Amino acid sequence: MVTRILHIWIWCGISPSATNDINPTRISNILSLMIIFVLLLQVPTAIYYWNFGGLAKISLLLSHCVLLIFVPLLNWAQYQQLAKFTLIFIFISYIFWSSFIWQANLNVHYYLLLGIFVCPFIFGSQGVTMWVCLNCHVGAFLGIDGYYIFIINPQNLSEYHQIASLSSAVFLTLSCALTSFHVGRNVNRTQSKLALAQQRSERLLLNILPAAIAHRLKQHQGKIADHYEQASICFLDLENFTQLAKSLSPEALVDMLDDIFSQFDKLTKIHGLEKIKTIGDGYMAAAGIPTESRCHAVQCCEFALAAREVFDSLRAKYQLNTGLRIGIGSGEVIAGVIGRTKFCYDLWGEAVTLAARMESHSISKHIQVSQFTYEMAKNKFHFSPRGEIPVKGLGQTRTYWLIGQKL
Figure 1 (tube, rainbow, N blue to C red):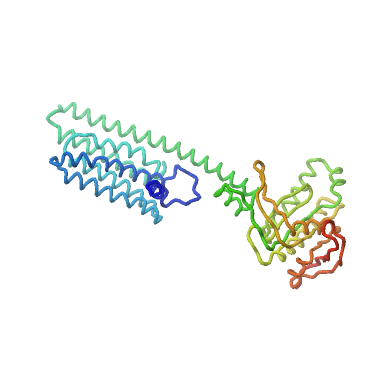
Figure 2 (figure 1 turned 90 degrees about the vertical axis):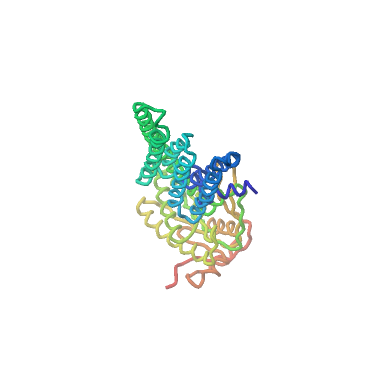
């Protein structure tokens, strides 16, 4: 129970997806908790020495403990900047009042030097707010130290020792402030580099997995396996690719495939499909996965027509004597992430098999679709029946040619 409360306190106001432990909001929550812990440790001492102003000391300790509860509450309400200012104000307030209540040089104000080092971590090394809070710590420290030197203990120090003590305090705070700024700036630089590295990793992950699947994989380390009652799969394949590969240099071949598949990638985004993978000269995309869609067959048909049109223009650009076979199948699909190294997001099931057969049994410059795809998209597109054809593994199967979109 206690561990649960501490976890809620520390992560209050922070997104569950946050991975940065050096988070200003998290640091402010931790500091508020640490200060409360330190203050409560002083309660037994104040009670034991009750005759030495115990009531005032207990009131000071408990009141500031209560005030520190507002820090995570303000962070939870998304007032992070106000929470940081509240933390600084309460911290300086406690040091200030305790120095005067104790009326003795107990070096309590040296805790303000710790506050100087903390400022860059909760406000960042840049900005006016950090310098304002840092100077508040410096001013409070020098003020309290001067109070002890010139007011509380003047009879014990000569004028020379008073000036020397104050000078030492000034140099000490200046050194702490400069060191704090330098450390904070280096931490911020490191955080920026880590953020850039994380963004690059995110982009690489999104190039391998769909965004929704990547998010689930980061949140949960278990297996990802989903069942879709209805989805549509589209396969595209270059004809006579083996002969084409022999006639081109490796660089020219890779450049051409990259251009063709990049154009297909753009079309998947336009028509709401998810690119699954490329296999040699083959391209596989799906509609209704991982985000379910009622018009998945229509999306695949729109994509196929657009891909055929784009490929015609690329054929002229590269002077290709080859065509493009396209097949679409609809039905049940199982999707999941497989592998431990070089893992991939893949699909299995009726729709995948149908789409693969529709492509392999198609002919150049044609788009062949299954019966189910036809039934779902016939109101928006023109089709021509091909009739029943023998399909490997499926027997006699009724198929259709996708002609174009209805006006």
